[in-house]
Length: 312
Image (tube, rainbow, N blue to C red; front, side):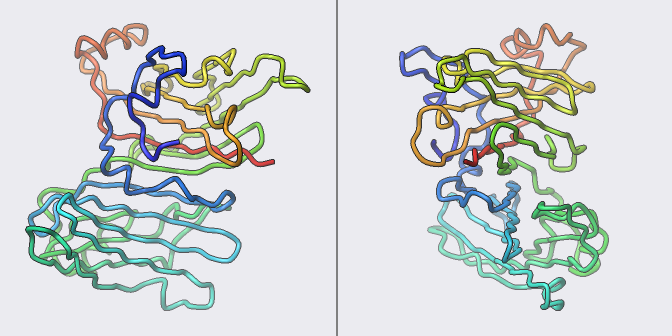
């Protein structure tokens, strides 16, 4: 499976073209690699577009957790080749690491001068869920460059601005994508946001059938907040596809690619993409597909990438 989704990824081997997802910021998404991910290690990543020292940059804030370690990392990159990274390991006995700052040099750009970026964090009051690497609240991770705060992740924005001792940037960082990994045998559950600051939704994916010899039809269902949103029968023939769904007054385009579940050797994940849709008119849910074509429905530019790993 490729690190990003393209039109060619939604084509059957027979050559029948499937609907391709609207173009998320693939360059930004590629900064959060899926290949080489270790099954069983919880990882989340949020990708932003931010203006740093006068230049557009991709900022990725990722969190990881397993039995032995807990960490977060901030990676910054640009089209001109400029790059910088800051990784912080959170050890239970190292209390001083739960709040601090670190300076990194954003250098290597072909046509831009190096810039100093300060990463600030405070996790002393952070609240974590069971097995979830990213805090649910009580924290901040912030970036400051050229005398302005360009990004704040977390619910303690005022504390971050006070700590940085400078004003927020006029152009705030824009969420581009979010990536999460879930694990299971037949059922995969996740709590995720369709917007970086949106409500948390319960996502449940179930895959069944196949019989003892694998002869019977495979089926898959995707439920959001307990309501079935997508049902796919004959999954071995419809292993890639998409469907518009509506729930709790929200509208989302859902894409799935479970080819590697069914046909690839070794441990490889299935990919599910959730892309919010904004209606520019009072269109009925039944008219969403037509709206995507005639322009009455617009996507938000944000995508949630959910990687589902099957465990033996």
